Each structure stands twice: as structure tokens, then as C-alpha cells.
Length: 364
Ligand code: ATP
Image (spheres, rainbow, N blue to C red):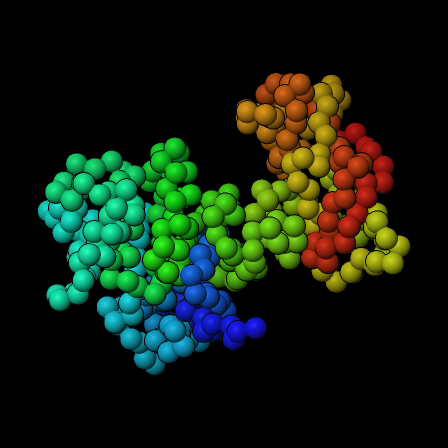
């Protein structure tokens, strides 16, 4: 077996905050490696620190603690910074940031130094489907074409790493889906490693080799999409990636918890529920059942048509519960209802990830 290749990017123990001592930490002890030709998604809710991490990797900001390495060479630490223009990193932003007064060809060649081979720009324009558009100006292109040009321009100087900050968010659905499926192929053709920021779990899971989930400055899990979906290590990852419900749970004894949807017991009598930590039960929208019921404590607050199923949001006490139902189960907005846990499913108790079974069905 060959030696594993040197990581293209290494982020080691990175801490960052804006302002001096006392300001809140925006990034807390981030560790992340990107291997050659890997596309990694950086996924998390608004304000969790995604852009701040990109800025530290590019070299716009200096970390408070920790360091960044590119191809094994240190480029940032709290005392020193290699400037962005000397890092050979390509960048693609959500608003294409093209030069409006330059043609497609001039935009594509912008980062290529004098004397460097311009055939690469021509090859890249063909690769992203813009061959023949060289003389046009950005305002003469569609949104999708502009974003393709931004990608070609970022790749033209043959960077070893490309950072993409929500590159598809300003495009309409059809163009977004097409462009996102093309991205891995374009990066692979160029031998580039990519780090793509997104807040859309579906987008990250669909195209990335691995997905790093960031929450309030912490990297909660970095794993292949299938692993993230099948074995999320924290309740946050499970609820954010799977769009699942996290219900508060109270320990009744070493094998039983109570939740707003009834009691659940451990599937195995060899497990024991911890006493010293807040508990939550993860329930996917398809693990729940819904019935109209005049005495039910739930109220339908929202109903979305998903094509093959309904997505309902039910208000139950102070909670909003999401559940998926077959199209035959039609309830109307504000209708009183009962939500139960499907007895055939095995919800998980976090943080220990203990498999549970529903014990009694109560009217809720
Ligand atoms: P979004 O998805 O909304 O773009 P994000 O995950 O990229 O969010 P960041 O832009 O990295 O989040 O911001 C992380 C936190 O740092 C936020 O609380 C934000 O308000 C704060 N922050 C960002 N830039 C600055 C700044 N220049 N000065 C002070 N606080 C900042």
C-alpha cells in the first residue's frame, strides 16, 4: 500500500474571536484536514462561524490560537501570516464577483500571471460550458453562466485549494441543481481540493466526499455523507443534517425516559441512562404518526406538499414537531390532532445514542 498523501489543508486547533479578551469565541478549537482532490462541505446554521473559518484559511484574518498549513507548510499562526495572494487559493463567492468591464476571456485570464500558459483558461471555459462566449461581458450572461465563469476564473491559476462560499445560493433551483452536480467533476478534472460552505444539508450530502458540521464555533462531526446520516454523533448533527425533531427527555429510571410524546424504554436491558446530562430523543419526521382527534393536544400549524408525502408541523405545548405523512392522511390547518411515535421504529436517546422503544401510547 502507498503512503497516504500529504493533506492539502490542515487546520490545527484554531480559535478565533473578533475584538479583544472577553469577546465571545467565534471558532473554538477547530481541527480539519482536507486531502488531495477531496471536496469537503462546511455545513452549519447562520452565524456558526463558516465564513470566519474561510477567512482564516485564505489569510484575511490571523487566528488567536492554532495554525493553518497548506501542503504541509505553515501559512498562519497567531504571530505570523502569509498574505492571501501568496497562498495559491482560488475563491468563489455567492455573488460571482466578476469584473463587469472585462470580457469573459479577460475575466477567465485575470489570475493567470504574465508569461503563464493561457491555454488553461480556454480549456476551463470549455470545461464549464462557456466555450464560444469569450467575447461577451458578464451582464450578457445568465446567473448560472456567471457562476460557471467565476469557477473557471478561480481555477485558472491552477490553485491547489478552492474555497467556495455558498456558490449556488443566488441561483434558481434548476440551475442550482445542475451546477452543483457539475462541480465535483470540474474540480476533479483540475485536480483541485475544494472546501464548500453551505447551510443546506441536502446540498452538502449530495455532492461532497465529506461533510464537516459546525455549530456555534465547534466542529461537531466531519464524516462521509452516509456516515453522517446513519451515525450522527451529536443531537445537533442529527437534527440539523436529518432535519429531525429533538425532544427534551427526562430520566425516570436507569432504563426509561419520559418525553412530550410519551415514555420510552431502552431496547437493551444492558444499557443504562446517564444521570448527569441533559437528555434528548431524536425522532425523524417519518418515525411519527398523526391522527385527527377532537381531544388531541396538538394543532396543525403548517402543511407542505412534498410531492410524494405531506410535511406537517404540529404545535404541541411549546414544541413544534415536524412529521411526514402519506398523501392519504389529510389534516387541515389548526385541526386538533394526536402525535404518536411509530412503535416499529427505534428512536435514539442523545447524547449516549441509546436505542429506545415507545412504551405506552398516550393522547397528546
Ligand atoms: P452565515 O451563514 O449567516 O453567513 P456564518 O456561519 O458564515 O454565517 P460568520 O460570518 O463566520 O458566520 O460569523 C460568526 C459569528 O461571528 C457571528 O456571530 C458574527 O456576528 C460574528 N462576526 C463575523 N464577522 C465579525 C466581525 N468582523 N466583527 C465582529 N463579529 C463578527
